Image (cartoon, rainbow over all chains, first blue to last red; front, side):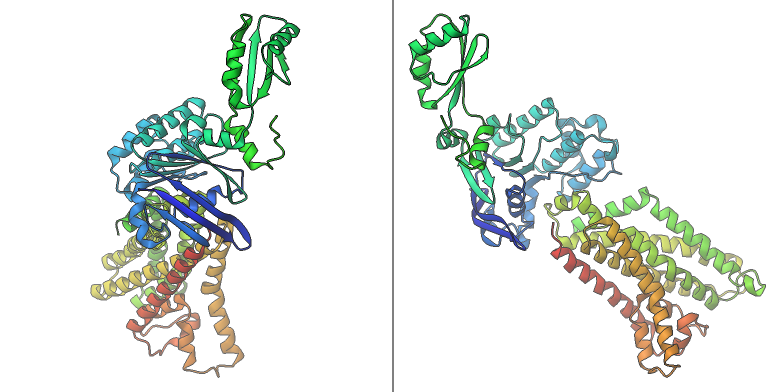
Length: 310
Length: 274
């Protein structure tokens, strides 16, 4: 069953067109990355899925039901949501906050304690939330989102304020949930490091879906060049000369430092280049770099002409 | 229903934690015992004078304090949660806006009710224990009605506070709005009525006047605690001495005053952008 389906959804506030015909779907066990700059429509999309707003036009369905209808309430037990900025209740301790939200989701205190452990907040569970750092509050928010073993998880900027290790822990948790069949929608500005944890990416701009698909599909669609780095013991001139002799695909080479050269080429040339370059014994290292999510993002969000493939 | 109780329980716990309950109870107890005992000090008498005098004086005190306390306790009920980001989160939980509002009212109302009962109950007990020649039943009856109507009055102003809280987008504006409501209902309304009376030189339509009093919940509260006594009303209520309203009608009016702003608060909350 499809967890979330948006069909040609429009949403306008007063005279602002926030969404203009968004279509998305999310299946169980899938992680969908939702990317876009501020005002691109990420938050509005989340609110529509959560039933906090009604679409002006088009259909939103979650678990096969309309989330803005009152009878959707029962489904909310299986939805986890981490909002972008939650201060929670500064006067309460982390444990009290989690138990309060737990009661609303009919989850017992043992589960709350287990989650606090899991999220790495057990040591600070009995301190007031106002003493928490941004990262600790974020962890508490995550614990809250995971209270009822959700079937659908919506995360708005989940790793903001988390240190690298906590971020890694967080993503391993997402991977685990995905393995259990939970569908995850992940909104983020922070692009590096997200790649390997998402199945598909939707790039939003001006209330429209600019691109949607797996990363390899997006790469194909954008057809951005990959970069090739070659390291050698030879002097730069000599290396340049050697490369010219080996292949016609080494154009526009730039020196990175004394013994390394870099250039861009179409991704489809990868094997041909590899075969050619490995013939030379003086080449120590070859590095291919696929266009990163950041580059894809720039490509799809900005005017397509601005990034000119070479 | 479970969700309503969960919200109410949290509000009540917050009330204990930030010492609202203790503070209000103490203020009520000190002032009410003081009034019961020294209310007639100006006339050169110390000690309990009469039940009607005491109740009327207590009502005058409550009419100032209870609305103020209720407004202060609840003005940030919705806008505060919004500013902390918890409102958005709560609404993604299996919980409707109506349940959230009812839970808040139940929690805050319990705080008001408990403080009123304990605070004013203290003076009832003092009177029964220490005053001479008092009819215990009469005291209990008068104080029961007093505590019940004071609690409803508190809830009326809690509902006003929710209206303000659902309406505005910043906590500071809600605080300002709360003070404005207090001025309007506690001070300005009666003053305006007096002005009308004076300006028309008492020629004001006699049937219309009692009806006008029903338009202010604080006056309804005072009327409830005035009838049944041959007492002398104070201020504006002197005119209402021989009113035809029974206590049933007055309680209904007070309850209507609770439902009206509560319904308004719900509508405003539903329309509030997130």
